[in-house]
Amino acid sequence: MSVPDNELFRIVDALIEVQRTKGERYTTFSVRGRRFGYYWPQTQTVGLKQTLSEQQALVSERPKVFEEQFTAGGFGWVVVYLEGIEADELSELVFEAWRLSAPEQLVAEVPDWTQSIPR
Image 1 (cartoon, rainbow, N blue to C red):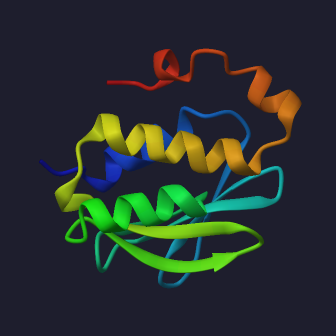
Image 2: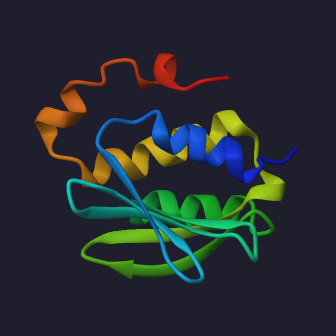
């Protein structure tokens, strides 16, 4: 069970209007200027926007895979250790992070997002 970074990028890039911005130590993921995730290659972790309840559920259920990053604007950001997660579950979390940041009309354009993610 592990998701390599190229698989993470395929998952992210399958969503519409995603901008990846590579920084010195991490890459950010945004949709229409709203950030929904970060990737840190050194630690092989990704930070994803989630609801507060989802953040708490993930961290309490599997603390070796998920940790609380921070809360902001009514959302809970969670750190995901790529070595402890399957691609299908990561896809769902990435989509949820994207959905929480994307405008409603853009979300409506992706009715069955699982079909757009390359396997």
